Amino acid sequence: MKILHINSYYAAGTFYKPLYERQQEEGLAVAVYVPVPYSARAPVQDLGPYTTLSANHGRYDRLFFHLKHGKIYRDLVKRYRPDQFALSHAHSLFSNGYLALKLKEDYGLPYLVAVRNTDLNTFFKYMVHLRGLGRRILGEAEKIVFLSRPYRDRLLARYIPPAQREALYRKAVIIPNGIDDFWLRNRPSGIKKVDPESIRIFFAGRITPGKNISTTLRACRLLQDRGYRVRFTVAGRIKSQAEYRALQAHDFVTYVGYLPREELLHYYRQSDLFVMPSRTETFGRVYAEAMSQGLPVIYTRGQGFDGQFKDGEVGYPVESYSAGEIADRVEDIWANYEQLSKNCLDRAGQFNWSRIAEEYSRLYSRMR
Image (cartoon, rainbow, N blue to C red; front, side, top):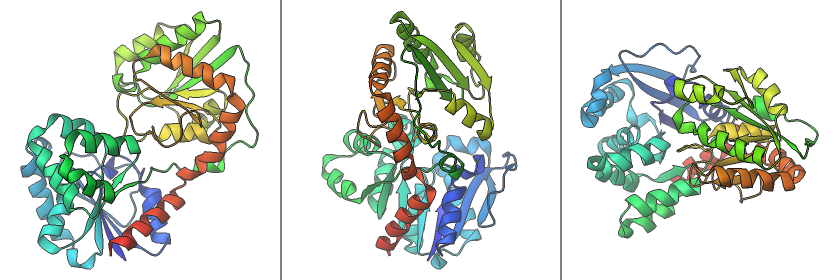
């Protein structure tokens, strides 16, 4: 079976490369089409021989959806013969799904489409003029992939007319993202022991307002007021000087900069739990990475990681801006730490890319 992946996000990093590699190992013929603007820098990492990186539109074309994607579509059908593929896999609803819809309309090529954070929290929320197009892309797709149940439920409830919901619900499947095998190969063998009076919190990610570190800082102060010794270690690139200044203002914070995964592994193992109450999050693979090292996680209710597990199984969801709820859930974790840490180690294997590739293969087979 030959699969055409349409993934405009792939040029920014090799996150999906393990999926494509596993699919090839399973005997699928994979082609990955990556449209980028003329001004895009060449990727520093190898995207694989199956990938076509195509500069085909101007940076300002993004202001005009149909103009930009018309250019991309014309380039796409020049580079590939659609009749050679069994189906297309669009890695986002609007930007990539539009191209998959056009391939179906013009060549009869079936497709599945994934719904990302930007689809729900930018396109559907703010681009009212494109909502009809989004519903048409969903309606014509054979399958719709969501990373979590809250994203599926919120999209159907807020943006889909009642008469269309049941049909889309039947086509929806939940498939999480995977994490690099590095994290699963390096899972610790023993259960972490913690000091009941000392809490070591870790964060890894970009230092931006969207990651909502300021609320985590307030939660740390509340825990200090409750008698705990708190250390908050932060790793990642600084994208907001205001957020960085907020970190510097607290003596319980240690900022360690952007780290390669080998050094991140050390800090995960030197910490007790992972807290990231992001405003929005498609999935949040850092939660899964933290789990692989036995760290219970605190994540945002209604965002991408919520619904992957039962509340209290590997951690807890919280309201993004509620420092009090975060502090309460940290104490709940502390009351049953060893069991939650064990659960994290046991459950992290579900984010293995090989298992996820098998799920996609079964999904593709049902579409033929």
